[in-house]
Image 1 (cartoon, rainbow, N blue to C red):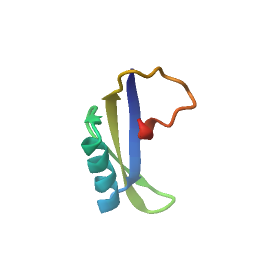
Image 2: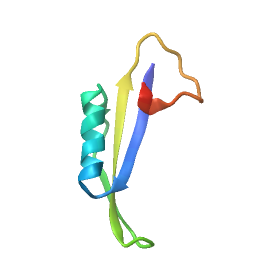
Image 3: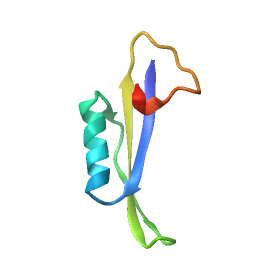
Length: 68
């Protein structure tokens, strides 16, 4: 099964650490990162799609994708 996540957060080191952690757990970058200004908070936000192949499991809508 192939799983997909979209990691988002403020443009700070915590966001970079979250993406780095995903990469070190076997996730792969999927496309370019996104970058947008949140006018309500006055903060720039980043987003990065990641995918991962998980063998021996079937998809279920209740599964926690980040734990795969």
